[in-house]
Image (cartoon, rainbow, N blue to C red):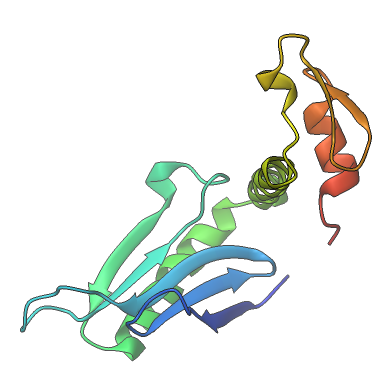
Amino acid sequence: MPALTRRRSNDSPQESWHIFYGDVPVGWIGIRSGVPVGLDLWGWRCGFSPGMEPGQQCDGSAATFKSARTAFLFAWRHVLPHLGEANFEAFRRDRAFHKWKRRMWDEGVKLPTQLASGRSKCFCGAAINLENTEQHVYEKHMATK
């Protein structure tokens, strides 16, 4: 079972951390922007999508990083037993498909859905069509564990 790891976010001017379970981002802890004085400065979010139902995800706020981290860990311990490998795999597949799609666009290659014939060529040179695109992406372009 993977351990939770935390990586500092460079995307925010405020202190912000992404939480990972193996290779899947499962949450966030950070300073909330625009919070009035006297309210909880820190926020946290536990969950990921796709792979979890909206009702399974939770979030909250806390006065300090330590209390936000404690609240996140409590929520994660409640959520994790309800997740199976299929939940994490759904996220990985979605991530792989979107990474592939962005690469197709960057390379100037049209997707099968953008052509009347429903056929195209992947940037790797393989013939793809409406029926085999997902299978091709998962077999040839999805990072292995």
